Structures are given as structure tokens and as C-alpha cells.
Length: 252
Image (cartoon, rainbow, N blue to C red; front, side, top):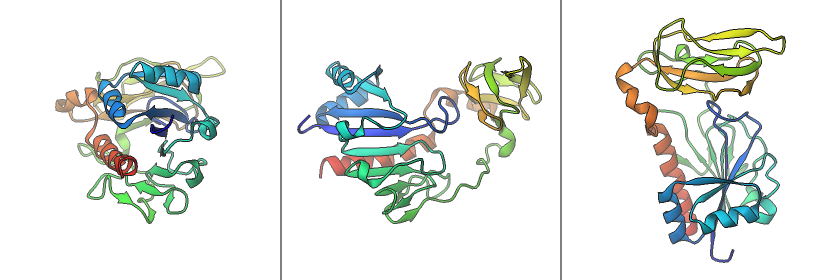
């Protein structure tokens, strides 16, 4: 692995995929020029071990290694580690995990918990690189879109197994059932939207959730349907800052 770029990305997609305690590691182990090629290909392959990850790199793809406890880190020895769980708190990431550690959003102090923090709150400072201090604290209030904030975000009314009744990009009306929750008692509890609009975010079918878990969000702007199939401006801004930091570290 000499002269190879190594990066481990910890992330959690709280809206769509995995619970707040799960950490997913993407192990980048290739030369800089090949890293660019792999990024351009944008093909990810799940790997069960670091050895399998190496084989995936040999195919010019990006290996995805699921490691809830980060047990592979001592052997992987990443050059860069990015905590992109966005759990709004530090779940165990430390500066000792890699020569450069980056965290996204609140819950971290740059210079203490990690080397750098990237601001994730919408506004003039979105994507700002913070080398001392912390990002804006979690307000608990979703950003305003089309005049709606908290109303556009849907949470689980009870614990259970999430069952979809709709798909991302569907138009839904206020009060409509977008999903159901199968409870341990065998009940099916409806999950309804408060506003009309486009179902922009939705948890995958069959996922177990706790009460109050964020399961979906609705965009009231019907003309923004195309956004369901594009990377958001917020995501691109944050990713750009991360790429800037990684590139500076690896090509200095």
C-alpha cells in the first residue's frame, strides 16, 4: 500500500439508510491518479474485508466496507478519516484515527476531537472549513423550504418496521398516508404527511425504526421534481470543502 491514498469515511444517512450508531467505512487505497479515475467511475462495491477491498480497487471501483466499530482502522491505517455520520454528536471519532481527521456538522471541536470541522448548516457559512472551534449547534429545527420547516419533515409515531406506501418523487397530499409501521403487537400504524408536495426523502422499506425517528421529508415546491434525482446544493457544497481538505493533505 506504499504511495497509496488511504481514506476512511464514516457516515450515516439518517434520512434514508442506517441507524445513528452504525458506521460505514469506505476505504480508499489507491494512487492519486487512480483515485480520480475511481471517483469518476462512481461505482461502489460492498467488501467483506480489507482484502476484498483491495480486489475491488483492482477493478477500478470503490470498496464499501461496513464496520460498525471501526475495527479495521488499525490495519487500514487511513491517511484521511471523515466522520460524516451527521449524528449531531461525536460517537467516538478521535484525532488518533488518522493523520487528518475531518468531521461534518455539530458535535465536534476542531483541534480537540478532530483536526477540521466542516459547517453543515444552511446559510452564508455552509461548507466553511473550521480549524478552531465548532460548527453551529444543532437547532433541532429543519431549514425553511417553500415556507415550511418542521412541517415538511416526517417522524415515526411509534417504533416498528417501516413499510413504504409511496416512493421518492411521488406527489402526496396533506394528510395522506405515505407509509405504515408494523408494531411488535402486529398493528399497522399509518405515517402521514402534514403538507402537500413532492416526497423528496424516504426511508427504505423494511427498516426498523424507533419512535420519533426521521423517516421522510416533503418538498412543497412541486416545480422542483428534478431535485429528487440530483445531488443537492448543500451536499455538493459540503463535499467540495471535504475534497479541498483531502486534496491539500494528499498533494502537499
